[in-house]
Image (cartoon, rainbow, N blue to C red; front, side, top):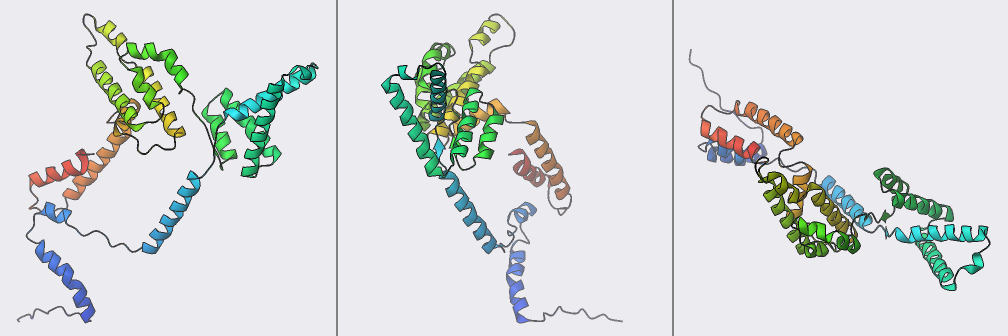
Amino acid sequence: MMRVKRKRSHTSTAKTKSKQPAAAASQQSAGAPPLQKFRDAPLPEKRFDATDKRWTERANREIVAWLRRPRLHTAIFAEAWRDKEITSIASKFGVSEELSESTKQAMAARTRELEDVAKKLGWSNERLALFQKLVVEYRREMNIERYVQIRRSFPEVEIQVAQFGGIDSLFALQNDFAKQGVDPDLIAGALDADEPSIDRLCLCLLELLVVRDKIPKRGPGSIEARRKAISDAAVNYLISTMLEAFDWNEDTGRIPASFVVLVRHQLCGVNPDLHTAYRSKEKRSLVAMLKRFPSDLNRWDSQRLMDERVFVH
């Protein structure tokens, strides 16, 4: 008995037309190597344009609002707090009249400045007093717990967090940096968050680290050579000063790539444990996927695909 092979029929012309591009693409890629098929696979159709648009608009509003937050210099709050302490002590011992007129005027000016800040932010006297108390405690002990407390209690403002930077510390430590091979002039330019200066300083530090890593751990003179080399303490200190400069100088356009490389080297290196674990998972997933590929995917294509998908990261 002869069997008749039935032809597939489509219920509508629209469906036929919609399948034509896919069929054409399939015919074009039929003779292509499996690796090319994998690369040329069409991307998933974007179906949530409206949702993406709303998300983008909301993200833009949040960025604008975040950038508009007032950045408060904490020194004025600490100085005003000290004024209160001086006034209280002078009143207790009955020597208020002995304060000079210039001192009284400076105290009054700082008080007015704090009142102006509170007025602009819509703070009550109680909220201003709380903020001032938390800021003074933070300046006395700059730990992360106190910083988080200020940020959570006053999310509408940002405060100055610089601790190490400043020209005074550079003058005090310039001989120490020079002995380790760092030009103090490079540091001075980086204190203002000048991108080219930070780039030059980072390249200098990276070169010094390369030289240090090549010093033999054993042998004549190796101990003395390592003592004279750049220390991690010096590198990390300079990284902190550059980060503080970025924070306070709002005109910074772009963080130099050399700074990213330097920070990454000091923090975790190029192969941290988590990244190694990620690559291992990716490799296992890719091997499982390759097993489902057609048999004509040769060994060279498999290895090339694994190199591009896993080992390039």
